[in-house]
Length: 382
Image (cartoon, rainbow, N blue to C red; front, side, top):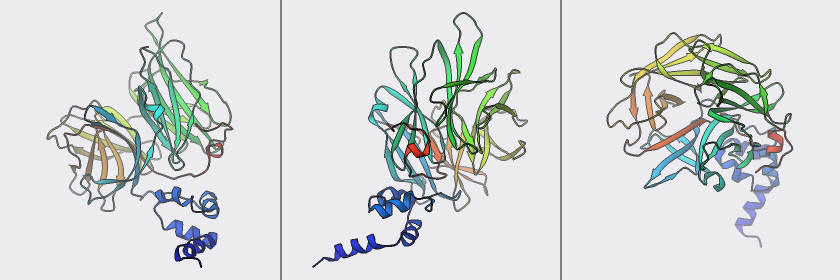
């Protein structure tokens, strides 16, 4: 006679797809990878186009790649999925973790590029005795823990700065990686600027495209509405935003707001591009770009300066808006802070004595398909 556990298991397997889909819709998304292991029917429902695990803009979830000092050894192997939790001492709690492959941490530094359609791109730079070391760009699908390693580039010369971007062309459905480099010509005091692109499913190599004759500030790009955006300087040495159209692969300039701030930093927040400018005495101004390209001030705030650590990255990044209307922000890439629009005040959520380096990305949607389908390229995932 079958025991109760067998009866329950058989009943679960007999559920029709519509009922399974209803059950899955009630579960937190980070349970879905485990649900794929229940049986073929559950796996097919999750992978099917009928099941859309998109996360709404009001979702409390985000990705965080955390670098922290534990004693004398840095720990940064995991990509964490965090959930806003006002009752938690640090305002967030980890609900899932994704292990990055060991080979990417052997004498190397990892820098997160950006996220696009639920995929995350990061660049690995090996720490060698040579001054120049080729970078490796890796695309990660956190829901399946699959990696794709973009073919390495071969530099001929010395590059001074190198920034990347990872985006999607809505018309062609192709993903693209863009690299902007400042190259030092040993025979001249003039720097050369070049842009290259790797387009999945079309060109299986890095291809040079027309580049602005200017410098980028070294930060990686952010993706929004079919375009990648970087902060840079134009020929007049003025700060501008460069937008690369993912379809025609052409750059355009977007002027800054009329402000006298410095250390510009851009980020996508609530479906719009935001620019943070640093002022004096730990004051920060956040501007929002409207659909017509003009700017409107979002808010201005002063960060509490008690026990301030010395940070090289001085900016405020908006991350998520909680149910109470407060905005979770990341200050200087190391401190989680909470902004209250009603009081126009910032509150620190973390201990100043612990040195961290966060790279935080919102979750917009997820995809459980294989990389061969997502990237439309017939390569085997690493």
